[in-house]
Length: 103
Ligand SMILES: CC(C)(COP(=O)(O)OP(=O)(O)OC[C@H]1O[C@@H](n2cnc3c(N)ncnc32)[C@H](O)[C@@H]1OP(=O)(O)O)[C@@H](O)C(=O)NCCC(=O)NCCS
Image (cartoon, rainbow, N blue to C red; front, side, top):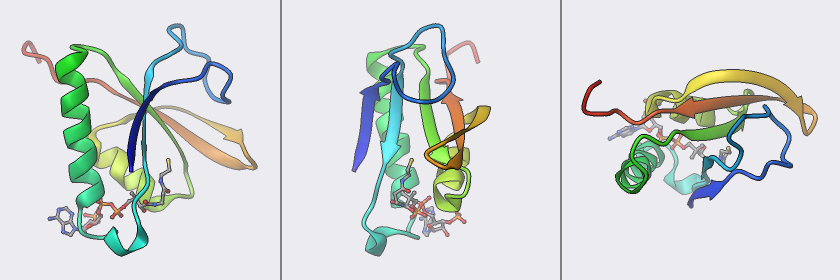
């Protein structure tokens, strides 16, 4: 499953000036881990999103202890904005910016 939802301003995490940003989520069956499917599918979803929302960033939140998820975020090109405590664990909040023609 890959989700792209508008971020709920009530959720814990950084208070961003333009709440309602698109937020990426991903969850795959364990049998499908380790083949690169998550990264490939999320990259395609981000590409699709960028096509319909030119120049718009996407945010992502995951536990720092979730090594697989952190690695997917890094491979997709998400950049750390900040870390914070929530749900009894350290959370990582990152942002992804689409590549534009001028980049
Ligand atoms: C997070 C999650 C989606 C990551 O899945 P994953 O399979 O580890 O991620 P990837 O698709 O990037 O695949 C990783 C590995 O596949 C392997 N792989 C095999 N063939 C590959 C290929 N052709 N291309 C790329 N990677 C390949 C690589 O070894 C890669 O590891 P690397 O990052 O060291 O290079 C998965 O752990 C999950 O669903 N977890 C539970 C839900 C969750 O925690 N979601 C995040 C909450 S925010």
